[in-house]
Length: 305
Ligand code: CP
Ligand code: NVA
Image: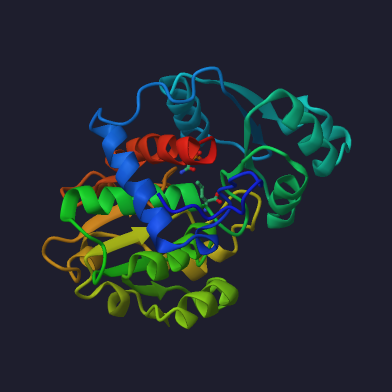
């Protein structure tokens, strides 16, 4: 497997734009091997992962905990309110202390600056479990899920519809790393990270930004959406703006005949997606949720190797 980390430094998993494509490919393939029951057996025996949550979580928390235990390791879960982070202890000091107790740290937080500080001061690997600006573990699971249903993502057309949020930014990174075309349809005030778009385009990725959801979805192989109200980001005034971006059966009818639908979850049924699409034959949202665990087992194995 290609190694991105510098010799002597911990192998962090911070964002998809910090890797070479071969490393991400190897992680997806190891995730598939774990799912098939053929990955290494208990490679992380005796290792402990600290999970720091400054925002709520169901999937991230349970998938990391179950995955770490299946790999032979264990976890400690910390939430902001019941740690000294909630009383103002700095991320840098928290990083130094946690590094004395555990072998890796996963963090879900708001500012990407906090993630970077944690990685800078920790002497153990740090994994991004979501910030306001990205959600790389989620998109690794999305890529794995597409591939297990439809084969390679390279050359496919992926449509993102709705808010140009943190998950969209990681999909922009993924478009360059995995070689797909990405069409993003969102209201003009909610366009995705310009920095991510510029990064992907510099690498030859085709990222098309538009405001018309039908134009984005027409002929697409994969349609994605996410909540209109990300955690801690915004007020309900944007719902009116986003209403034309609901993924419903009428919109899905414009996609390719064998198109898949994904949503990182939690879904707000009746807002960004209808029951008919969530529960319909093109939806692979439950596989997508399951694959968080398999691909994160690969990420944990890589970080701790
Ligand atoms: N998709 C995802 O990260 O879900 P949680 O917020 O439940 O962790
Ligand atoms: N965009 C969502 C993702 C939740 C997993 C949020 O940040 O709340």
